[in-house]
Amino acid sequence: MRDIIFEINEKLDEIERKEGVRILHAVESGSRAWGFASPDSDYDVRFVYVRPKEDYLRLDEPRDVIEWQLDEVLDINGWDLKKALRQFAKGNATLFEWSGSPIVYRTTDEWARIREVSKQYFSEKGAVCHYYGTANSTLQYASGVSAWRYGQV
Image (cartoon, rainbow, N blue to C red; front, side, top):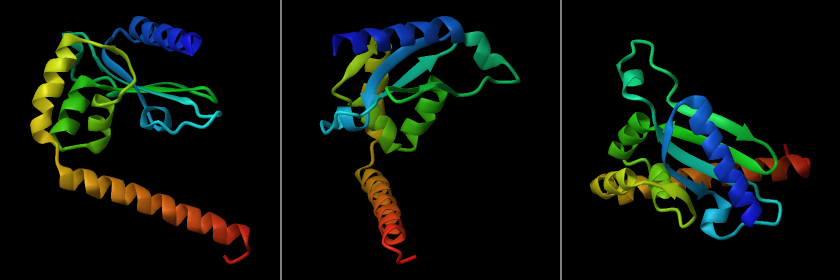
Protein backbone atom coordinates (compact mmCIF):
# COMPACT_ATOMS: atom_id res chain seq x y z
CA MET A 1 0.00 0.00 0.00
CA ARG A 2 2.86 2.35 0.81
CA ASP A 3 4.22 2.00 -2.76
CA ILE A 4 0.95 3.05 -4.37
CA ILE A 5 0.61 6.07 -2.07
CA PHE A 6 4.15 7.08 -3.00
CA GLU A 7 3.29 6.66 -6.71
CA ILE A 8 0.08 8.71 -6.33
CA ASN A 9 2.00 11.53 -4.65
CA GLU A 10 4.63 11.42 -7.39
CA LYS A 11 1.83 11.76 -9.98
CA LEU A 12 0.34 14.70 -8.07
CA ASP A 13 3.78 16.39 -8.01
CA GLU A 14 4.10 15.77 -11.75
CA ILE A 15 0.68 17.33 -12.38
CA GLU A 16 1.68 20.44 -10.43
CA ARG A 17 4.93 20.76 -12.41
CA LYS A 18 3.59 20.05 -15.89
CA GLU A 19 0.24 21.84 -15.57
CA GLY A 20 1.57 24.81 -13.58
CA VAL A 21 -1.04 24.38 -10.84
CA ARG A 22 -1.07 23.97 -7.07
CA ILE A 23 -3.14 21.14 -5.66
CA LEU A 24 -5.21 22.25 -2.70
CA HIS A 25 -6.80 18.93 -1.83
CA ALA A 26 -6.33 15.38 -3.17
CA VAL A 27 -8.32 12.37 -1.98
CA GLU A 28 -9.45 8.88 -2.78
CA SER A 29 -12.96 8.59 -4.18
CA GLY A 30 -15.06 5.57 -5.02
CA SER A 31 -14.96 2.08 -3.58
CA ARG A 32 -11.72 2.47 -1.62
CA ALA A 33 -12.99 5.62 0.10
CA TRP A 34 -16.31 3.94 0.83
CA GLY A 35 -14.59 0.91 2.35
CA PHE A 36 -15.64 -1.80 -0.08
CA ALA A 37 -12.85 -2.08 -2.61
CA SER A 38 -12.36 -5.40 -4.35
CA PRO A 39 -8.87 -6.80 -4.96
CA ASP A 40 -8.91 -5.43 -8.52
CA SER A 41 -10.31 -1.97 -7.66
CA ASP A 42 -8.39 0.92 -9.13
CA TYR A 43 -7.40 4.06 -7.21
CA ASP A 44 -9.81 6.92 -7.95
CA VAL A 45 -7.71 9.98 -7.12
CA ARG A 46 -9.60 13.27 -7.20
CA PHE A 47 -8.16 16.70 -6.57
CA VAL A 48 -8.96 20.39 -6.58
CA TYR A 49 -6.28 22.74 -7.87
CA VAL A 50 -5.64 26.43 -8.35
CA ARG A 51 -3.87 28.04 -11.30
CA PRO A 52 -1.74 31.18 -11.19
CA LYS A 53 -3.95 34.29 -10.89
CA GLU A 54 -3.03 35.41 -14.40
CA ASP A 55 -4.82 32.36 -15.82
CA TYR A 56 -8.09 33.54 -14.28
CA LEU A 57 -7.76 36.90 -16.06
CA ARG A 58 -7.31 35.41 -19.54
CA LEU A 59 -10.05 35.74 -22.13
CA ASP A 60 -9.33 32.20 -23.33
CA GLU A 61 -9.59 30.42 -20.01
CA PRO A 62 -7.88 27.05 -19.77
CA ARG A 63 -10.00 23.93 -19.26
CA ASP A 64 -11.42 23.62 -15.77
CA VAL A 65 -10.55 19.94 -15.42
CA ILE A 66 -7.33 17.98 -15.57
CA GLU A 67 -7.73 14.39 -16.69
CA TRP A 68 -4.35 12.93 -15.98
CA GLN A 69 -4.39 9.18 -16.02
CA LEU A 70 -6.84 6.37 -16.54
CA ASP A 71 -5.62 2.79 -16.55
CA GLU A 72 -6.17 -0.44 -14.63
CA VAL A 73 -4.51 0.94 -11.48
CA LEU A 74 -4.94 4.72 -11.43
CA ASP A 75 -7.81 7.03 -12.36
CA ILE A 76 -6.58 10.57 -11.63
CA ASN A 77 -8.44 13.76 -12.40
CA GLY A 78 -9.21 17.07 -10.80
CA TRP A 79 -11.23 20.25 -10.94
CA ASP A 80 -10.14 23.85 -10.99
CA LEU A 81 -10.96 25.77 -7.81
CA LYS A 82 -13.36 28.05 -9.69
CA LYS A 83 -15.35 25.02 -10.91
CA ALA A 84 -15.24 23.46 -7.43
CA LEU A 85 -16.60 26.62 -5.79
CA ARG A 86 -19.44 26.80 -8.29
CA GLN A 87 -20.24 23.14 -7.66
CA PHE A 88 -20.20 23.64 -3.90
CA ALA A 89 -22.67 26.51 -4.32
CA LYS A 90 -24.96 24.16 -6.28
CA GLY A 91 -24.75 21.55 -3.54
CA ASN A 92 -22.88 19.06 -5.74
CA ALA A 93 -22.88 15.79 -3.75
CA THR A 94 -19.77 14.41 -5.46
CA LEU A 95 -17.67 17.38 -4.38
CA PHE A 96 -18.93 17.07 -0.81
CA GLU A 97 -17.90 13.41 -1.00
CA TRP A 98 -14.38 14.39 -2.05
CA SER A 99 -14.26 16.92 0.74
CA GLY A 100 -15.19 14.30 3.32
CA SER A 101 -13.14 11.38 2.00
CA PRO A 102 -11.40 9.42 4.77
CA ILE A 103 -8.37 8.90 2.51
CA VAL A 104 -6.56 12.21 2.00
CA TYR A 105 -3.37 12.23 -0.06
CA ARG A 106 -2.70 15.91 0.57
CA THR A 107 -4.52 19.01 1.69
CA THR A 108 -3.91 22.64 2.63
CA ASP A 109 -5.06 25.21 5.16
CA GLU A 110 -6.85 27.02 2.32
CA TRP A 111 -8.87 23.90 1.63
CA ALA A 112 -9.83 23.59 5.30
CA ARG A 113 -11.29 27.12 5.17
CA ILE A 114 -13.11 26.41 1.89
CA ARG A 115 -14.52 23.18 3.31
CA GLU A 116 -15.80 24.96 6.41
CA VAL A 117 -17.58 27.67 4.39
CA SER A 118 -18.95 25.13 1.89
CA LYS A 119 -20.91 23.30 4.58
CA GLN A 120 -23.62 25.95 4.42
CA TYR A 121 -24.37 24.86 0.83
CA PHE A 122 -24.86 21.16 1.52
CA SER A 123 -28.36 20.00 0.70
CA GLU A 124 -29.61 16.69 2.10
CA LYS A 125 -32.42 16.73 -0.45
CA GLY A 126 -29.95 17.33 -3.27
CA ALA A 127 -27.70 14.51 -2.05
CA VAL A 128 -30.63 12.10 -1.78
CA CYS A 129 -31.72 12.96 -5.32
CA HIS A 130 -28.15 12.52 -6.59
CA TYR A 131 -27.69 9.10 -5.00
CA TYR A 132 -31.18 7.97 -5.94
CA GLY A 133 -30.44 8.89 -9.55
CA THR A 134 -27.10 7.09 -9.44
CA ALA A 135 -28.64 3.97 -7.91
CA ASN A 136 -31.53 4.03 -10.38
CA SER A 137 -29.17 4.37 -13.36
CA THR A 138 -27.06 1.50 -12.06
CA LEU A 139 -30.14 -0.66 -11.56
CA GLN A 140 -31.46 0.15 -15.03
CA TYR A 141 -28.07 -0.64 -16.57
CA ALA A 142 -27.74 -3.88 -14.60
CA SER A 143 -31.28 -4.91 -15.54
CA GLY A 144 -30.56 -4.23 -19.20
CA VAL A 145 -27.31 -6.18 -19.08
CA SER A 146 -29.03 -9.09 -17.32
CA ALA A 147 -31.90 -9.08 -19.80
CA TRP A 148 -29.47 -8.97 -22.70
CA ARG A 149 -27.39 -11.84 -21.25
CA TYR A 150 -30.42 -14.04 -20.86
CA GLY A 151 -31.92 -13.25 -24.27
CA GLN A 152 -34.82 -11.18 -22.96
CA VAL A 153 -33.97 -8.16 -25.11
